[in-house]
Length: 425
Image (cartoon, rainbow, N blue to C red):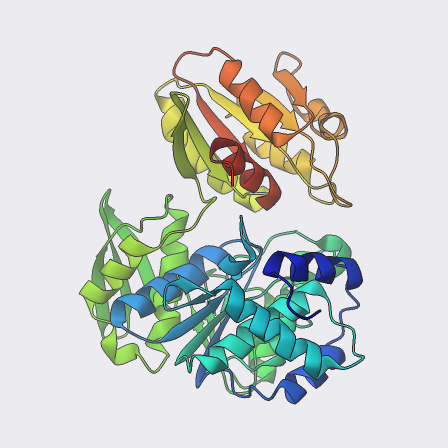
């Protein structure tokens, strides 16, 4: 696969190395050792959880940037370009850099098969080593224990809120899923829990690994002071900070976890109030109740796809409902997600539903999605169906409801296609 463009590489990887995962780390570990990029950074922060991983990792990165710390950020999935997954000091990896990494991985792997995600993870590690980053910030792709990011040991493991998701792979209970997430906790590491009551699986793994557990509500505290400011406290540290740029009170939980992680990193002495404030104000992340005005309509894009995320959306929609602003929802979901419980959590918030079909092996038609959520909704609720997200967005703009907002949500795919409808790439 020499002299290929990045897009040609990605197409080839998807074709040769399917997304089907065997959940074994032996293959990628062998290639990682041959690639000779150990250690990828002097200090590693790994973030696992069901909700809030992206917000937390990006907040950590933004604070590092504000402090002038040399960092590498690896996240997934991407919204528009693969390059979004690998960011070094605020800049996405270039096509040429990623191709260089892929070529090195191709040579190192020999006849060992790697998945698309494993290639991506090793590319990030290769580039972090090349750029001599001081801190590597890793977002777990799925689970934790057997995720490709877990071939390196985290100095700080952050566990964000856990909910039922990917149950076919991670388990059918919160405790089973938490067990998988807790797999990122390594010997004598630091563990930051964003939830004030950590699951027993996390407590057990922390004890087993002799890790230091730092719990929200016990060790660090945070609270809103008023609409524009909040306070964070940990031991002798007290920071009065502006509200995060990312929307929603739940972002305080993510920001507090991010600050706690960095207070246990080599850059702890650089965490002045002004540095943290700058980081919070500069954190940008698409698809987190992201507002876009298009065709004189107010759109909000959110990647929420599980009941816990729906509860957060419920709170975000409350001000609109208080001002009697109708909500038109464009919903597209993968077939393995809990559409019924998500719809149940939002049935009183959404006035009109426009369901969108999603392509791919895990996608489903709008009619299939309708069959899953219609029994949950009131018989008088208006439900429309569209072939694609683009068609659904256009249909939503044509629905005349006075001062209505349009919420596009349900999947990264839905948000990506919706944003692409507004701004074709």
